[in-house]
Image (cartoon, rainbow, N blue to C red):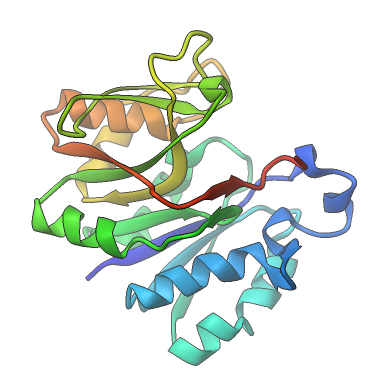
Length: 230
């Protein structure tokens, strides 16, 4: 059974002053909180169990919204809230959610991402080709501030680098990932980066080194990274 892990942590410092009074995941776009678009995509995938990573500063606000979210209440989705005391990286969030995720495959979705398309095609590719990880990618003009992927002709990921000074490609990670349980072993084998965080890019790279089948899927529709005001 596919589960979901939605990351709603972080302090939203790059969106201040908007995020002095509201968490970034709840900022409205077209009169709907950003995270509601995420939840709608998960509902369309038929997901019933979703873990939500929360930060202490915004946990109460996000939890209050999600418990009465139209997507959640209309679909009967079950929510499990997981507190991340410090922002120690995306892979650290997965580590905290290990008890909830168990040995089930899961989709990890950053709660401040806006995508035109859902993951229906990725879902079919992930299970149809028996992949260990499928990473959503998008071409951007300036990849240096993102996790950058280098892929071969068939879309298999050769290398992932977090915020490189000299990017090897213009394909970046958009914050939506499909994982099999191998990711947990990979996270156990990595060390914190120079930022002091457990990077999901390092964990996926470790999966590749372990012989995992890791592929990138380039999104056709638009993608908005809402972490910055522009």
